[in-house]
Amino acid sequence: MAGVINVITKGPGNSRRALLGAEYGKYDAQRCRAALSGPLVADRVFYSLEGQHVRRDGYFFNTFTQRDFDGRRNWAGNARLKYVPSSRWSLGLNARAEWTKDLGIFPVALNDTLARTNPYLVAFDAENIDKRNVYSGSFDARYFGSSVELTAVTGYQRTARGTGPGGTEADLSPLPLATSTYDYHRDIWSQEIRVGSTRSRDRRLGWTVGAYGFHQRNPSLVDVFVDSLISPFQQDFHNVTEDRTDVDGYAVFGQATVTVADRLDLTFGMRYDKQTTTLHTKRDLHLQNGTTIPGQPTTIEAPSSAVSPKASIAYRASDRVLAYATYARGYRAGGANLSGLTSPVPKTFDPEYINNYEIGVKASTSDRRVRVNLTGFYIDWTDAQVTSFDFTTFVNATLNSGDVTSKGIEIELSALPVNRLQVDWNFGYTDAVYDKLNLSLNPQMPLDLSGNRPPLVPKVTSTLAPLVDIPIGRRNTSLSLRGEWRHLGKHYFDLQNTIVQEGYSLFGATATLRTRSFDLSAWGANLNRKVYFAYGFAFGARYIMLGAPRTLGLTMMLRPWQ
Image 1: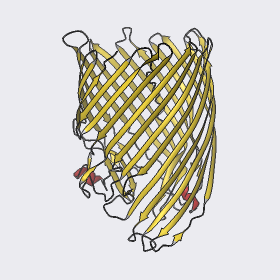
Image 2: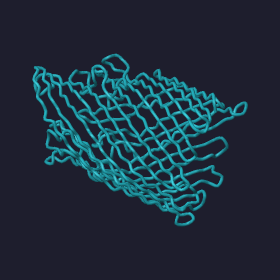
Image 3: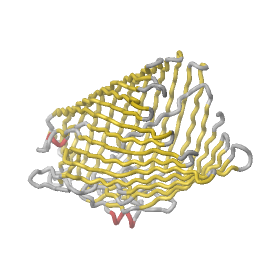
Image 4: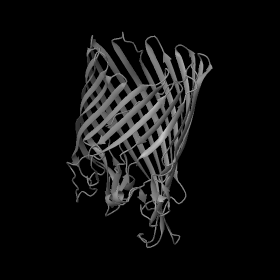
């Protein structure tokens, strides 16, 4: 429902470019970055290299172990090679690796009161270390014809994730009642091919057709240790689950935009998706006395498919005013419930769908000093996939038990009231409600929460950011001062709407001394020291995680080549 953010990075070219960056801030936050790009063979072969290291001590403190909690260590690198054999062809090879260690996941307090009266304190007997390594690579080939463009992208990604020494908390308390260790892998192979018309302002018809396919394999091993104090067997035991989820999917799609009059464009698109999720699982119980209660290997298959249309109309009233209306249908595939193997809940759940309607205007003044975007939207979300938990049987499952209506407006305003002063203001209002919501896994005991608001959806969001650029001394040297006020209205974290964060504001600021080849910035976030709930969930108790406290820092960026 939030849409997609498409990030297009700057590729290497004939110009040599280099960047060196260093950052230091509160909580011993450090970031070092280096990047280099340029030609290997002029006009033919280009490269780019980038590396980064980030570390930070924890915002939280574990009173049980007397150590920081929620720190982070991260290393990442990226390499790209681009070959241009002619003016019509481009070939690219990209490789990326990232290693992340979170030194304390789930830094939660046991209730709202503890979170506010003892902020940034947790009490866990486990370290809750989470390690994640991601490796990815892609190969792309592009052909630029006089009337047709062809793009083919082959991709692969591997994710490996596991626990550190001692595992992670399963009981989320300082008591050694339950801990969990896990070893998780995910491999994804993908292929996309697109053919489209060459971009040209003179063409009255622009079109794209293509196909996409992927195979995903997710093996995992989870070992949950349960102490005899809460064990149904009156002795310690290990609940060992071996899963493998295979997902195969493909899609075909097409879209065309036709200019039916000088200032009027019509767009039509269609996408067909088909996906099959197959879950292979086996669960064994290993008791302290040496007895093993073996589980029965089981396979669940969940196929799903959907047709997703799109239509829009855009009218350019002038070079500075564009009005549009859009309809698009979205889809998320169904899946399998692991709990369906041993309990009477459904073994699979169906896809969910949204119908999104949007109208808007984009406009600017003749001198471009004021730009404004106004948008109104209406979203009809049906068969929403909702995860429910039954505390009497300790069973959880995902069901298609929700329908949501969401409507609202968005305003984006950017203005230059005087020279060297820019003011940006964004405002959003969202009225979202569950028209239907049943959280019960037992048909005999319905839990109707219709009328509740979806989690993490405030009615009001707003950001105000003034930026002033002051020239100093010689040419190409300036001092930029930027402030930011961000407001989030009242919102909930659980489907029952019992864990609530009232509306709050955060303030930040940045001062940057900028030259042609050097930037030095001093910055601060959450300068008003607001203690606020960033996340929460109900699982017997009401667990609360606070947002980041006030942080301050310095950032230096050196660009030796331009």
